[in-house]
Figure 1 (cartoon, rainbow, N blue to C red):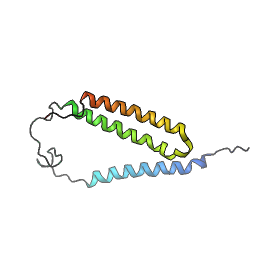
Figure 2: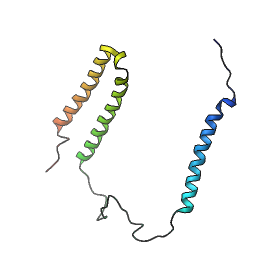
Figure 3: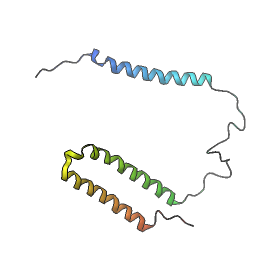
Length: 125
């Protein structure tokens, strides 16, 4: 078994990549600052979102059900991400891996049933 001593030359490609990436960011910020339009009008400085004109105060209470739905979406989205390593190693994990995934899915199903029972997904009419 041989060990190789690394030198500074071995890190040159990494250093070059960092310099190019940093240079691109600085260049882009500099050029956009120079090229940006300087015209300020009332319409340009007004908030705009999704084609809906701003009316009233934006600080109004939002139903907790909206946040619960968003949190559940993120939760189940992350669950799907954890299925990828299992799918890649499906053949190697055999029956033990299958049981682990079934337990994993079971916990999420219990949580989902709890959320359904509490009525978090029912919108007010």
